[in-house]
Length: 272
Image (cartoon, rainbow, N blue to C red):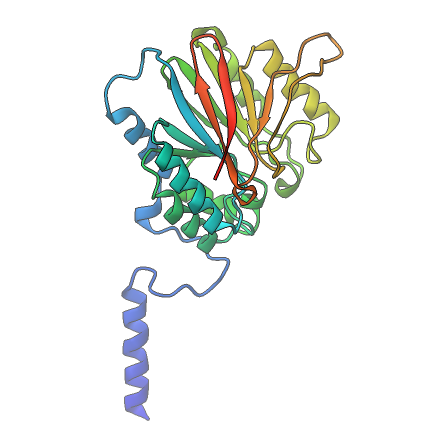
């Protein structure tokens, strides 16, 4: 009997010394060191090759709402790689379905097959369980921006329901937009479309005014799995609503391609 306890003690000691040998809970928030700070790493990769401070036409791809459709996401990645002339890829949120570490791990494994950097914004499903803590470790800040070829990309967490109805940080977004005239184009990426179920009417007007007053080129969203545009309405003060683009989900068999020119932006759905 004593020998059994000694063996058990040695086994527990060895497990304790191992780095994440076993996962004891579905709700673990542990992110292994090699999976951390993905946004920072992708930014480094994006700017590693040459000077990207001067404008020239470029293309980027959009995917969103992959949830548990990892095979379909992998198909989208293969097609994006085959097109080959994208500078980077944006994911519009809902990388996971239940905010579980294993879902984020699989998502990251699929996206590592991309031949170009990718950037993410949080979705409402990503905020379930310990998803918020996982996202912070695996990717970084929920609200962030970068400038590429005289164009600004702003990633904005506008999830409401899953964050206990706390108002999105519109003050941060306003500050990010204050220098709009310094850029040829500004793109805002936020998971929830402003007219959607999670947005109160007041949030719709605040967000839409920020987009219109600052002449945002394109407001990009996920959440609704069908790809479509919504850009024909005006606000009560007469300002035209900034063009909104809903990406669509890979299980629908398509992704979005956006081509940026000096004075205009062209986008299309690509089937695979």
